[in-house]
Length: 559
Image (tube, rainbow, N blue to C red; front, side, top):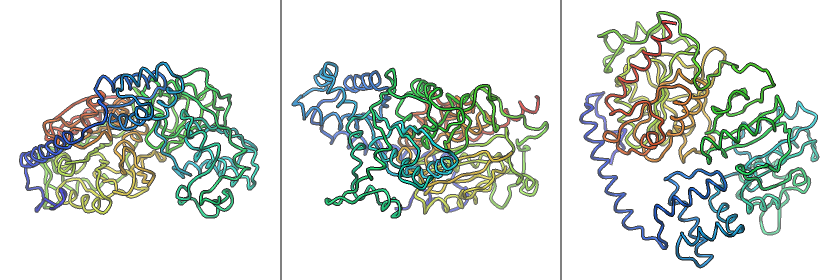
């Protein structure tokens, strides 16, 4: 069987209607398989929608954790263990027990807490931290969401390396909601496979081998870290500022927007002016950006009192981007020849567009596209509606790494835009589209007066690398209202939260409608969140992007 991205035999001869027929057929097949799978999955305990709603409400009330519908199976599996341990038969009886028993409430929260962690996760944060600590005489640091201690001890090792001693002048406070993982952190004992990614030199300096094959953090480093339980929705917090740096990475994603905003607001007085806040790769500060200056790659600096709100061209929700010079327009004339023998739906003469290779300026539009299952055909249809002098287009398609380069090459053959696989450090220019490589996340960063592409191989987000959310969140922070984004067909929910962040930042957002999607998971979740300004059939999305970009540039031409 050929992969979906190998089915084209020519260059653009399959019509949108033929493509939609194939999409509908594939979607029906997937739905049939899903229905068979559901019928075959008998469960030990009945778990009704009312039970799940009660679990969601209780964990949100007591821990602030927001569980989406996609977490239902995970909740069943984890809480079923508690029903078996207690000899209960119904979830309703178990929830009654949780409400009346403080110890079981703790077990309930522990069961629903996700503790994915490892040493030196997102290494660029620790590279930055080491350089910064080396410039200081002492520091107080908080690992807010430390899990089983890997992050806190990574901070301790970084401090030891920065100062060149086992007793650096640091105080590290480590907190988590889960009491079981906190005990693991206090012991500081880890299986050998947990240390595989650590440099052998660091392992020999900061770990002691045990007789059973495990390794323990040296006593000197354990003495640097103080562990404590902290529930972000309880008051008061058992911490006392000010801190020089707070690491709260891949924690906020488990909370709803209101709770995220509350947590970030409470961080502000606990962090010294000039101190640093480190967030996870899929998180952002759109809801508290007035207090922080973005330094790039989810590192932020706490501003001093009275420091100007707008820094480094940062775009905030509701703010307008810098004006595009008068008279500049990208909308194509009624008829133009394609840039080669292959002509896009709204082609433009390549010769007349060569001057578009100049770097993009702040305030000029950027087009963002995210897709998964069925996306290769959908992306082609959208790109063929764009002219050769379109703003830069950034694309994330869930695809194995060895196929993204050939996918980009195939798009380049059938579209008026030039298309290539993205490379780290490339400068955004008009008339080009970039496809995220299958091995790396794609981000957008501000550099000087323009924008550059950044790639990194940090861990998957929403089980994907590249992740649509990573691109969308970075664009929401850097571009704000200058972005035009489309979330196309795909399974799961990757990109939905990012599309919401873009909309809240003032971008124009589009979701593919259910009828034309192979799988309506990603765009459907975006619609459910209210993240889409428009919900459109696939064949209307390209023209809608053209209208949105033209309207933005026409607005700036008048101002």
